[in-house]
Length: 295
Image 1: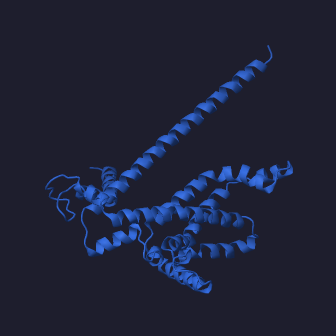
Image 2: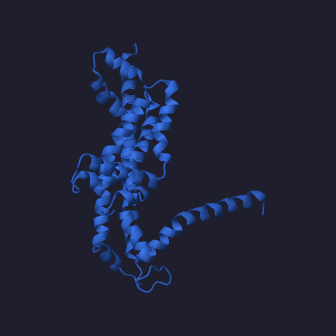
Image 3: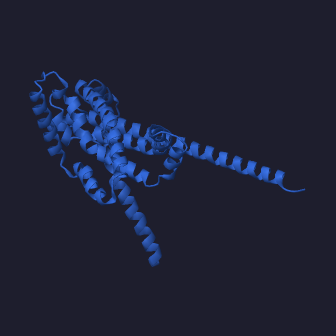
């Protein structure tokens, strides 16, 4: 056996171990969702069952936590994406000597522990509510509102980084040309900049929603009397769990796979459509060149 063959088998072995390390726990968790024992058990399989999905659907705390997580995620998208976009645009406008200082300030929430962000958000809005003499049923003491604000403080920085990476490829001469032709700044923003940033906007919104949906440290202090999916899961794990949590994992993984496959199908269709359009344009240009050629 040659050294090249040994190296090839070793590379394959390490790749297999890597994917087993990544997907092994998910596979075992998926098996426990369909096994009958009340404690999550993958081996041995006593009896295949779907009852844990029914238990999950009837778990009021879990369902309410999922609903709250969805609302908070949507709220974070509405707050963090515009703030991140504004921060990225300002970053491209400030003087180069001040960019490093500005960058350090706007990225600092990413370096701050989530516990600190959660406590500071809770204390700030509590003091502000006392200062304006707000009622305890007002927005100042709403766990949903405080979670949206607390999470947006650092998720907006993620959004800003996405927009910055996109803006680095933006040709500023397009804005200058539009302004020279009589367009207003608002028209330039909506007609030129926003269409160029559309992929980044979608990516930032998706990242903001997922980051909010799985956040725990900040949410634990800001949610107060309410609950989210992560806080409900943490409580269930501390008190003892059953395979309904595995059923939830199977549902989330299934939704993720469906979304990924759908996106890939849509992307390939778009690429095929663009290729056909480019081929048609090429043929039209070739026909036009032949028609204009001297006889």
